[in-house]
Every structure is written in structure tokens, then in C-alpha cells.
Image 1 (cartoon, rainbow, N blue to C red):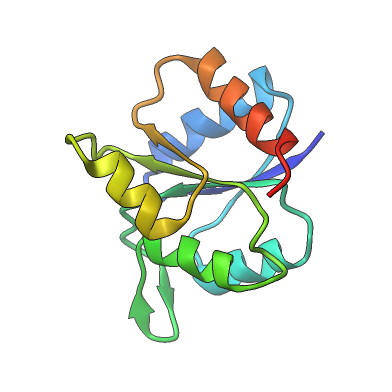
Image 2 (image 1 turned 90 degrees about the vertical axis):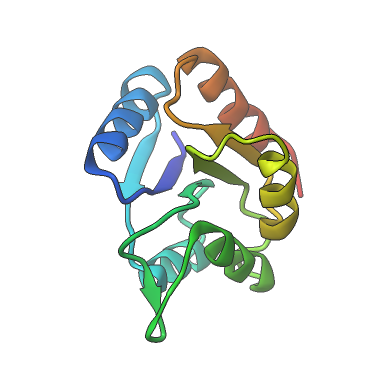
Length: 133
């Protein structure tokens, strides 16, 4: 089955999401927070979809701390990674956040954490993989 890249800085969230994706979804999950590695792995063609936390405490690139919005923008700017579906993961759930984050990041979807409806979560991932960009 497809390999997904999970960019999440909270170990508990990473463990829970990985378990859902692997056990219930049948996916292979790679977990990474290093931006250079994220860009490289995605450019290699090995990743079918990126699950990207917006607030990242440990992700730096070229000496600068980046959040998930900025990482998504970098992925969209590279022709090798521009078509990979990106799902933003965030605890930010205020009115207007969804539209603002999707527009700024050019991501394909937005999911509020914690993920409660696992079936809907997995269904969204399956749908995004099936849609050509």
C-alpha cells in the first residue's frame, strides 16, 4: 500500500495517527520533522500523501524555523512535489482558520486534531490519493 509522510512534533499524536493509518488504513507511515528530509523524501517520489502539522516546534530549514504552512508552500513550489496531496493537521479550529490556512498553504485538506472519526479520516486520505492534481 501507499507510503504516507507524517510531519508531527507531538510524540503522542504521531504514535496515535501512525497506528490508525497503519492498522486501520493499511498504509506505511514515515515520520519526520526535519524539513530538508521532508523535501528530499517527497522529491524522491516515495510519498503518496503528506500529513502536515501546522505548528511545529522542531522543524528548521536553512537556519530558520518553519511551520507547516511554510513547508507546504515549499512542497508546492517544487515541480517534483507540487502534486503530492497535503493534509494539514491542526488544533487551530477557530472560525476562519480553515479557509485561511488552506489558502496560505495551498494544501488539499484540513483536519482538526484530535482526530475522532477515524473512518472519515481514512476516507479523506483515500479520496485525495485518487484525485489527480
